Every structure is written in C-alpha cells, then in structure tokens.
Image (cartoon, rainbow, N blue to C red; front, side, top):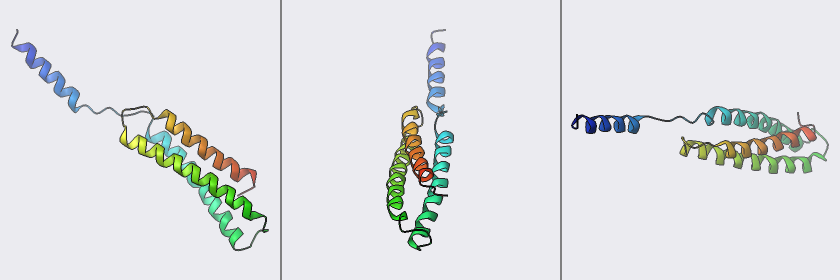
Length: 117
C-alpha cells in the first residue's frame, strides 16, 4: 500500500501538469469589443475621406481630430487588452476588457455625437 501512494501522487501531478485551463472571460468578449471598434473605425475613415475630399463642410476638420484622438485611445486600450489576454490565459482579464470597452464606447459616442455615419 505504501508503494502505491507515490505512484498515485505522481499520476495526479502529471495530470495537473498537462491540464490546460481556459479563461472564460477572454477572447469571445474581447472579440465583440474589437468588432465594435472596427465598425466605428470604418465610419470614421469614411468621414475623414469625405472631409479630405471636401465633400462635406470645412467644419469637419475639428471633428476629424476628435475622432482620431478617441480612435487612438480605443486602439491603445484594445492592444493592451489583447496582449493581456494572449499572455495571461488563466487570469481574469475583466478589468482590461472593461477599459477597452469604455474606450471603444467613447469612440463610438464621439462619432455618434457628430453625426458620423
């Protein structure tokens, strides 16, 4: 019986070492935030192009600057969140995803505030 205990312990430890723990809060929720950013980014690029081509009034220039700042903030938060999720698969990334979500929401709200469609 005493010889059996170390074998059981060794098997149990080997099973723990090969088990992969998946983070339930990671990529799916971050993917949704990245998709929302992509949609708003596409609208912002279209607005920028229309402004640069002078298809809309010149008052669009300060709006483009505000969109660029909000977009850069959102992109930075998304890069940070994606990096965290990729490098910490067993740690809850809720905080960094919440920060990315807030930044993307601000980008989307800025676009909506100025009627970017």
